[in-house]
Length: 159
Length: 75
Image (cartoon, rainbow over all chains, first blue to last red; front, top):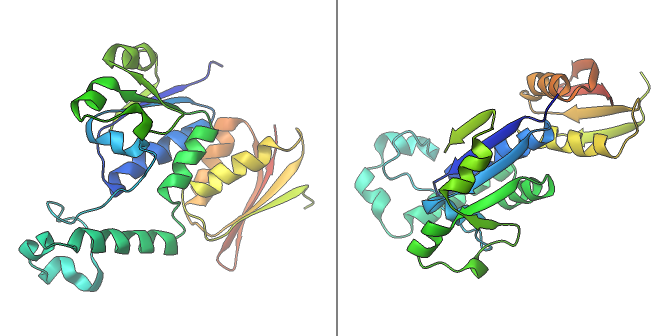
């Protein structure tokens, strides 16, 4: 049987949206898939050396909050300085308590499992980022190279 | 039943029990049996799916006192 292939495009740069690409790619690798993640736009934050992602309740009415805050806490107050940091700290604490892997751990597991990671060179330039801002196990390429892999993939996800 | 190696994945959540299982199996010989202990209720279905897709044999799957135990024979 030929090895199955999973291709993922990761476009989002928040803590919550960073999980699906890394969870799916590492699991697929454990199941014997050859996996590749293409990071573009805000998804580039997921492959920075310094992985400092945040979560926000703003524009996200589905986010559960402690003490039923999602029911009574006014949205406008969620925009106050420090709120994002607080939400992020609470989310990380909750994740650790529930035995959810840290993002750096999952990313490391992907690298170990030889998940290929490719950053979109166009958006790296667009945001004036430098190749040295990123982890070592990363290639820089464009849309055509994504299709080279995704064209024969069995599963292709846009996250 | 006898087993050759044991992995304690208690307290870990998806996908860590599966990733650790995969890693443990990698270091074992074909035919050897790995016992996995987990607390993630999702691991019941996931371990079945893992075994099916990787060709390893899930010989036994059980629950005792909130812990899930699995015996997997390496293909």
